[in-house]
Image (cartoon, rainbow, N blue to C red; front, side, top):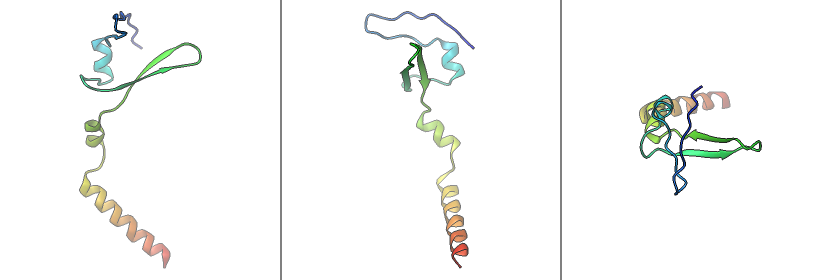
Length: 79
């Protein structure tokens, strides 16, 4: 676990330390969720970028083939 002290600017902004950005793959322009817990803890949760989700997910062709296979299986079960 990495723990760092950061300074809040007069506009309420903070900088996420480089080692934490690197560990969680947070880049310029990415979004995070800032969530307050009931116990007063504030969590910063990275939101995965669309580009990285696309890289992890199936291609359009793989999705199409899976959909066709699923439809065939459905038709066989209906018989």
